[in-house]
Length: 344
Image (cartoon, rainbow, N blue to C red; front, side, top):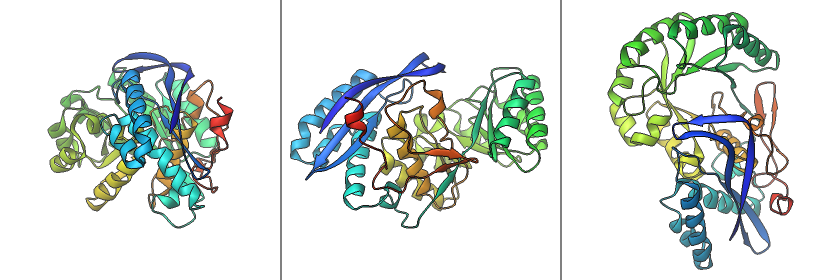
């Protein structure tokens, strides 16, 4: 096993709970067995995964342990989500490549999946700009649009939603993401108003710790999705509290595609819908997330159209976003060209 660092500049600064970042710094990973190569990506994100330095140290430990086999390498990164994602992805890519199957089929769906629906992320802008962005997305074929809300007054956000609905028409799904910005009373009012405009999902209306509050918000006409709440409580606690209709799964933050796949199987039995998104990753992890979504039967639009948030990337993107869908690579493994050689 080998790994090397990389730095990818963002098109615009991105704000997390830990501050503002201007680049995505991570590690490209390679494993090789009998001439077959697998690649993975470990791109830690403050507030979601381990730190960059902890990720590097974990990968160094995995590199040392790899001579004892893939199990030993994985054990060395078990407590570091991004590092485990990278190592487990490289191993999965190798196995799928050796089996001459696309990665999504290796993950459990033997059928040929050509496309995965994706949502357009409109972001947070004034009402006119919001409406224009939604109209552009619809013209490009997107059938689902997600608006960021919560940084303005709700009256301002409500005007943005109204304008977005008018621009989208009745057939396009609207979602909003509050990133935990509302109090319970604000969320009740917001959800009641959003239901009037046929908003289908509100993501993280309350802070991540408010499981009981999220449970009480369900059943008001807009489905409740949790994102940050997964990191804070774990899936088991969310399911026990019946706090969500939808879970937003970020493979990098969960520790790998295999972990995410197990969660999908678990929550689907409970009637909770899985959606897949990224942590603004490089092309290796983004492509892996597309394969994960492709392995989920009848998956609804996922947050996978994130490549344009990067100013540069690790290599050519094999996934095309076309008419509101990600075209799933059908080549062996991830379907990525010799990215290790390309980044030397």
